[in-house]
Length: 316
Image 1 (cartoon, rainbow, N blue to C red):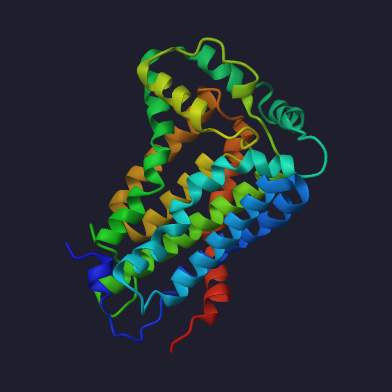
Image 2 (cartoon, helix red, strand yellow):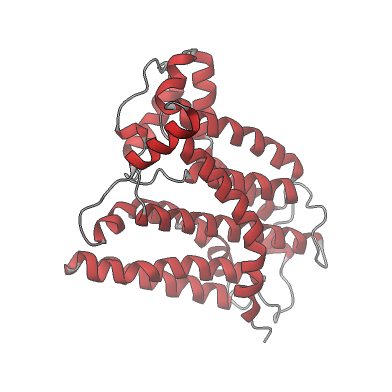
């Protein structure tokens, strides 16, 4: 099938999609926001090195997006994917940004658990597994939870490669419609990650995983895999709102718009992921509700942000 890259071997003076530029600006803005924190908070060679890395990445990202119509094919691919490829790095460095703020890191779990008690008359993250200690249910919900890592990239990749139709999208050719859908998706996901990361730094919450294993949680290979991934790759303080849920809700709603068949599967996994996040003791139920609300908000706000940030795209 024809990829976006091949299908958009367009006229030399075609401008990059506005949402491609907007996604680059959103990610670059976040990178630049971290520089004063590293300089003023951490100081020393480590702070300067992180600041320099942030600045360099922001410059590269904006330069690639600006030159996308006239650059090489590799530059075009990097411009398209860099906002999402940077996500693991930006997530990994979150504890360093939290520590760069003045004073010791203060986790807000007591406040979140008080909201949990008020809303649910209990603590679902510590109670659900014990109430339903069924190995098959546990493994299924944990499988939904771990699907998150693939679902960040698979729906955009299917759009990028032209797999499946994109009904209702404008453009002079099917490839143009896929390109628009792809860049709309990347912009919304970039905005979702950036907002989650900013909240994590300003309002860190450890999450129930750091406070104890939920009683009665059945052990199994899928749960073991999830625990191993979190042990090696999670960032402490990044629980509220659940970025897993925020991202998967954003992805599901956009996929339903651009790739209905894919979107239906993503929506089913999103429901299982949200339940698994609480059942496995990885997030408070409040985290999940906040993540779902944020994902819905992103889908509503992203088109307005695209019009504002993408309006400066040059046509020259």
